[in-house]
Length: 294
Image (cartoon, rainbow, N blue to C red; front, side):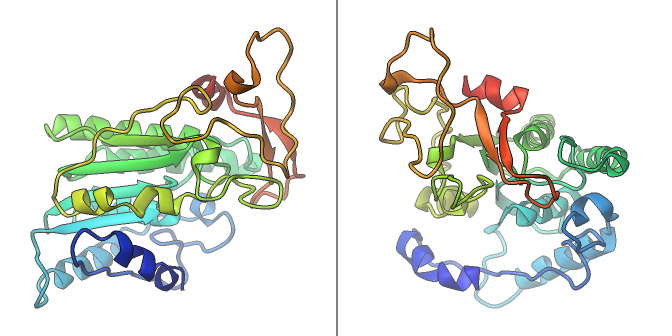
């Protein structure tokens, strides 16, 4: 349904005709993990046979009439990003021209701050295993990741480590470096607030609905490397930082010496307690996210 609703958007930005093939998750699995619960990516085990099945399906598609097997790209968001990375890691027997991932997610979790104590050790172990698989990925001529620095569903701490491993492998294979697009909250499709986009995980359009993205995905000229600039300090994305009217960001501590046009990003984020049963409340950004934003 979500893909069908976006068809007019794809038509509006596509630089040329292309075939969009959208797989469904296998029944009884969180893509390639054998657990469909709310924390399935933490509790479940990796199923390599499922990855092989999807790789075979992709290879078969490239042999169909009207398909250019030399111009195949993969992209996925959140859980879909995880699926793309497992396919890239295993290799599907056909050349992949480009891979785009958004809301980067993995198997297991490095940041276990919102995971129950008895699951934390397993989450770290599975995340380490996932990174080990990525360290031998097949390589790709163009690789781009888009991630929200304040994302509460796909944590920046996890995404950063995933991207580092992907980039290291690209370097080993003498392929172009991963292009990482880091987003501040107001750069998402919907500005986060207490009522909308509470988990800061809504930036599918920013990640993929771009003509330059599609052009590079199929082997064309890649876009210029994403220039990371702090929001509200001359950033190129438009208006300076504005407080969402439906959210009460904590006031900036006194003594910072900056006016309203140059204020620092808030030190707190709205914690919706997604998928964890925790009470919703304001909490400080993680150390890494805060150091990136400040």
